Image (cartoon, rainbow, N blue to C red; front, side):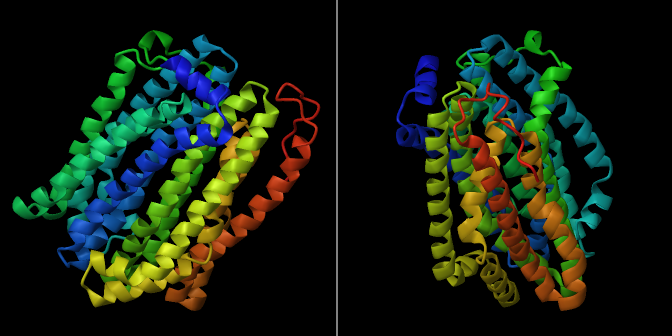
Length: 460
């Protein structure tokens, strides 16, 4: 089985390999998007904007938790795929084990801190007085499963990096399926409301964790998770953080910016906050699927680069851009034509519906270009280019959205909140094109990653 995955990364045609690696990741991410939307959908059926607003407030906190697990998974996964390309299996075991156990330790520390400061944290992220009771009920339960959430993110990315994308997909399917089944039972049958949604979520995540970890425990993976391979050296952490930290930064900035949007929207009422959350969850379907495609692209690109097969790497990049762009344009069309139906499926509250549609119209502006931007950022991660990866990861939320949120709402009111994100997306696209063009010059006549005279960080 391991030889089959290596053969996929090394010899199979680009399109077939990309489909084989990306399809399970796409399905997994689609299920993850549905997973995230399940609570919103069923709580929305309560027709209480404050209850729906609680999920909106909690979402960026959940993203913060996932971003930490993703840091070790994406950083360790990028290094893992390059090590596998170089046939260095011993170091691959060390990298994987170090990523896993470091994620475990950090998750415990983060969980304790969040539980202690949960109320100030929720207030910082925009919880109003009417939303706060629901938000506390939901978030305190979610925090209990922080360690499981982080480790799931770490293992999912590590498994994809070694070509075990189907295993990662099944982990998502199992956890999401359990969550979706339990949501209506706990919310309506047991009458637990938002707390029921939280319990359904953590039970699903726990089962998913057991399934994913069993892959390592039964020695079915290429790379090993073992305490004896846990070697927290400067070299290992340098490689993990070089790629993982930009991803962590991107997710953290996204979380902070969501909190800023919620805080700015507080003065407009719970219906606006609920509409923001609804729109974010709907668009997360497109985002997650594009990211799922990029996670299938990453091990193929990283392995080709690590194996010094530059022609295969370039062909993978071209196929990646085409595939991700197609997905983004597809969802642009679906959301444009079906936004009224989509919004009405979540809530019957007219005020929430009206704001959600207005927000969706604004978000559609930059959606067609998202695929290109994500693939180029993933490309830099795949070849171990920390500096451009960091810049692009920080650009959308850090360089552009957060400053825009500090300026536009004061000038344009609610419209400033609505259009801050699409403006930030367009500015990020321009920066991505600029950095990609600079990098293309270094790819010309390149023989591989060992050709140090020709491979340079693009000037920015």
